[in-house]
Length: 259
Ligand SMILES: [Zn+2]
Ligand SMILES: [Zn+2]
Image (cartoon, rainbow, N blue to C red; front, side, top):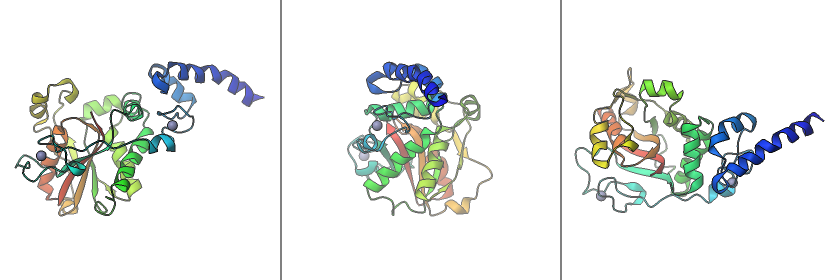
């Protein structure tokens, strides 16, 4: 009796969520409230009980990878040898999923602005999937996962750093060590609010090594620098410049999507 009554009461909420959902996605305006009642909806097809169902996950493609420096195609986003200069600290930027796919955009949006922190595990799954599909598991085994840090003040406002959540979930899935080795020492303007040529100076000198740090752990190891989204890659490269002091073997950027 109680079960059916609950079902009856919840149905309008469920239907409202579906009705408000643009192109089958959970309506954003009310999703906070709905999350309290329903743990999850697939962001691809709105099926209940999961943030991304297996068929929708399988439909997600990784984008064409480009060199950070020249913008031309490059396998796995590796910086071309002829494009690397002394200011390029990243070996490359890997992008797990195509940003133009609605489900990908929606998952990132939900994680960031609706504080659905559990979605981080789903986004980490997309990254792990990318490694498996591209036969990278062995190459990156034993890597250290470092999240792109957020300024303390901003993190206090949001309550969490999405890069921390995604990075630690990825490390767990891939059996890697999660090491928040960086701190953000400058509260910068959001990169998305700036023109391309302002983004570099905005983040310049914004990151430093977190203290205390076990520098020996990083020497000669590969680092996966994780964030949710990248645009020009300026933030990731700036983080990588700070990590270079630890003498790692390689530093790779890894993001869910590039917009
Ligand atoms: Zn689905
Ligand atoms: Zn290039």
